Image (cartoon, rainbow over all chains, first blue to last red; front, side, top):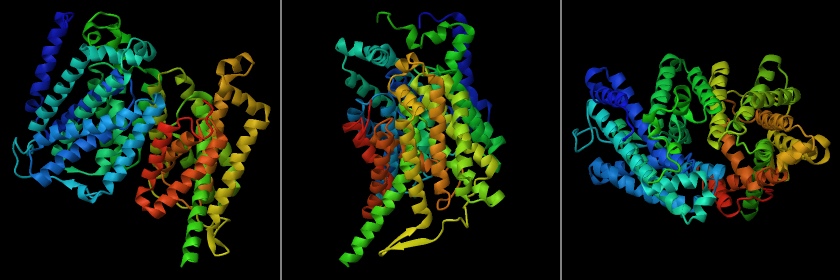
Length: 335
Length: 291
């Protein structure tokens, strides 16, 4: 952080104040809900970024981690009466173990093949959970609305969800930052950019990819629990669909893969587009929202492969604040 | 009783082959596109959807049978495939894999949205087609349209195979798939070859859609039923191999139908995808992969 300029510190302080006071200033539940959606999406994008961005392993099956996290905490609530806070951690652990079991064989697949394998795993799990009576199958799990309160992770107001989502996002960013600045981050970038060279220097590719998938899936599972407690209902299509997996990846890609704040930017833009097109065009079921959404994805993919942050850097020249988080600016620097 | 169950088994096996042939035809286009330029097309199912709507509108507007309008639909899809290549794909050939995945994924969403916008999200059916009813053959029963579709898929797949292996243009396309730079040095215009691959790929999927249209509901998101299966067929057959896709299509059709019959229809997709994972992990080159 030594290269932060004073202007950027001012900007950061302003942003902090706006973000912290948002739900107190803006009291309409619709807008509060919108802000929560953005924070939750950003958190998932940040989690995905650890595996997809830093380690370069493109997962199109992250919904499976989201779903397992949510199902674990929800089952612990409905069957064991345990607090969702405990469920959030338990869900993270269960999901990480699942992710390690999946990652261990799949990490030898490259590029497209790995991406397709992750789609397959998520689709299989969606079928399995849809037919699993103990998990309420296709019906889904309804979570109790009462008692409400912090311990029960149930609130009648939107405001607590906002701060929890914000806290989870900040935690995920910190994990991301910690990984980026540790030796793991250097190895991950080496694996992504020069896998052969990294291997010849004795970096165990699989071991660091496994660290990345464990962290990424743990955070994604925590996001799943938050979603479950906010909606108080989960079912396989809403938790485990490939559409959701792709949306999670898209958040990071839209903002900028492998950058700290890319997924945050991506989430703001993507959720805004999604909600706006849904509100203004989506009610009639005409598909206009999908047309706009699809067109934007194509335009970003074709014209700005490095995402909006990349576009911003091109436009304004590299800003120190962003560069501090950018992996390519650090390659070659000593730790 | 034993006799009865043998008949049932035969019936199941044959229906697996029939649907497998359609999967093969859808996958032929996908494997061609991948083989020639290493781009995975997530919008491939949407070509099937467009072919289905082509058949539907031919019938609804001009009361022309899907089989009559098939050549025109195939031609339109060919043109559409070339257009997509020229407008979008050409620009991402050297882009990172992520951009390629998301460009075609965006196309998938866009085309589904367009279909919904233009043609309503309702389920449509082509009724009163030329080929209709059932055909009984020594105790086994077949739907006429299904037999027609299977037969049509064999003919088109064979035509593509012959084109690739027996014509100059097809050989040039194959050469581009094997070594892009060497092909350029031999005077092959790789850009036209890529466009050709997209044209043929879209046309094959579109023809599969036309063949399906008389017995499969038509709706904007129908492509979702075929795109994952087509990936499985491509991987099992070996990326870029038309002959591989043909046999793999039949295997996938059998796994789906037999698995659905023995374990339960809700698990058939999971079974096919499990097969997919096993092939990816243990035989990544597929049955007839070249790479």
